[in-house]
Amino acid sequence: MTGVQTCALPISEGPNQISRENGSRRMVVQANVRGRDLGGFVSDAQDRVGQIALPAGVYLDWGGQFENLKRAEERFSLVIPVVFVLIGVLLFLALGSFAEAGLVFACVPLALIGGALALLARGMPFSVSAAVGFIAVSGVATLNGLVLMQAIRQRLTAGLPPREAAIEGASSRLRAVLTTALVAIVGFIPMALAHGAGAEVQKPLATVVIGGLLTATALTLLVLPTFAAKAVRHRPTDAA
Image: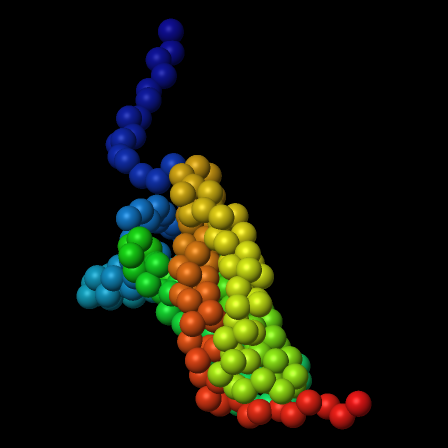
């Protein structure tokens, strides 16, 4: 009877899969970020990892949602200035006056301040969805300011003094401005209070829109007529 001789191999732990990319071994380390912003977390992680001396031939590459965030920030750095420039140009074309266009455009900064304060009050970081909310609230604030300014110009054209034109114009458009703002605010409340799937995208956007509309509406109804009464020139009645 012939015996079979076996050789016992040493047993050791190792990776169950070896991935390669561009001819090099690749190892993926994943993490889910909760309780803070993604950009700040990755920045702190990069500072900590940067203190470690890596062996020769080893390098790190940060990707995933952080990579998408960086791409979105680069796009928004171009889109947001273009949007503001277009808003200013359209206001000038609609009103025909740099002074009046500037008064209406003043609604935009206060809307942005209101959105930023709302994010701060709720402890939310700036994100891509929040940036979209800033763009949306800027459009609504500009629309309300344009409606109010056109009403004041109509009273000036009719021959009213600037102060009376500002008061009557604001009073006549009070319901329209409040309706536009309240409809948007009420519509975004469920998104601001969401807790299910997709809430991390909905909540910053809704928070920015609600906070921005609150401050922008106050500016439109109170501050804009006051400055319009002093800055807008009296427009005589058109000859028949």
